[in-house]
Image (cartoon, one colour):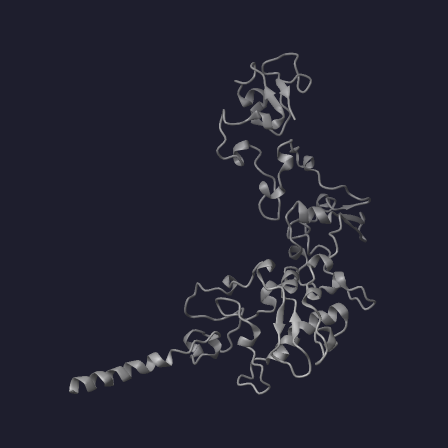
Length: 371
């Protein structure tokens, strides 16, 4: 009997902490924890968590970005329904637009703990009397996220823009789904700027930077609001940046060398970029490649012109010369590359002088031209 009582007593002691751990907190800031055990400062923040434990943990690693096609198209918000019907939030549309803003998903889902993205109500209390006054209530959080952008864009923050009055028929869901293509204007092929410099005309080939050079809109349009492009009202306020701010991350705009400035500035409109000005004329094979197939990053620099710099596994006999547009005849198929491409300078015109006295390229072809 004493053994039984002892076992039950021990079970009660051990079971108490196990029972206390059943509650799981999605937001660790609400859990009964001592902040000083992990944080060294009094006011840890999203950008400066002041962590003492797990120094390898970084906020940048949070999974806050997801493709827009993976999120719900519409989200019904019916937590606060006193005067209005439930609001239908076009989640996918805003997810698509967030790709053009500064923070993506994090611009709304801020201070998210490590792990999955949490809904607003997990951190913001819907009740008017909140337990934690340091965190804004749910109603304030919703309106704080929406009013700023909508006011800049449409200059109106009427409740009816998002809410349907009680008793009125809500809009059908199909009318609420709007694709980004209906909001964004097509990318302009080019933009001509007139400056006050000695060479005043700057031609910016807009579509080339996006389609050819692989730049996304957010790479240049940072810290900007939707109204700069989409606001058509008379009250539009365009936020202009320092002229070279967007360019100098890829181009050397700080140089005092006039030749550098003349790459963009001229007295007339400049034509699109042609690769031959680099000294390497793209042949029939390379001209089909995207710029990023050879150049990495956004600041394109000159590359090593030897074939093995890009074609690591290329060796004598493995190259199919047909891709250049010439199929060798039987007199040339055993030749070494350097017989025609002197000193293996493949960016220069081939020569026949190593073997022939009066034969020149391209008057005479060492085989057959093919398409």
